[in-house]
Image (tube, rainbow over all chains, first blue to last red; front, side, top):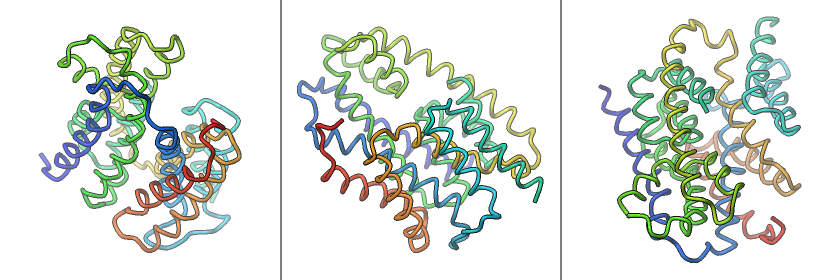
Length: 106
Length: 206
């Protein structure tokens, strides 16, 4: 048992339940205000790139902007395929494959 | 969902989590996107508070789904609803809303239970397979996490404004990642960029 990891899991479980249960249990009669609905819908659009791009381009606090950086090309492939509405898992597999092939060549 | 669970289980084990921790997270949290996000943060030694707050922000979209589903569940015992709430997920919501509006509560419950089971079964298989790959980076598997996030967001980009929001968020996040400790750039950028965008984008256009 690693207490730290379980503590994080417990915290994640609690805050996630707090996003699911209150409005369902309250049997909300009125829909949320339009601006709030819009904001809740836009959050994933802002969070996901904020998560992904630093993983691709920032390494140990330094920006890696090089054409010889395989994950950069993986990212280009993934965004192109997904924007063309290809299956998400297929898109991920092709992206991962691109990085593996470029590393194999380099 | 089974495959999605398998991918998650495999990657989580490779990132250094124990199988039982991955299963526990999948049962107790059961929110795929936020679990995918938490694993690389845990592996990178991010602060627990940063991981939990990021999870909360990523899962705030549940408020929208819960509010939409709520009218369909009038007359259900509250104890039931407390359980139904835990299996709220994007896929079941999409299925239930696509079929009828207001959604049929039983279609929703059936699909949610099926997805919960399929995801967990996938996670268990994934955690067993994940330990078999000796050198994940050689197969590009370290890129799988950002690949999942990029694929999920790119699949949602419809309007030109969506592309602008995603692009601004990417640039702001990279800048923030260079100055903020502990992966706080994710939450800070996500809340700030979406908040500003929600003030300027017209709600009627969607």
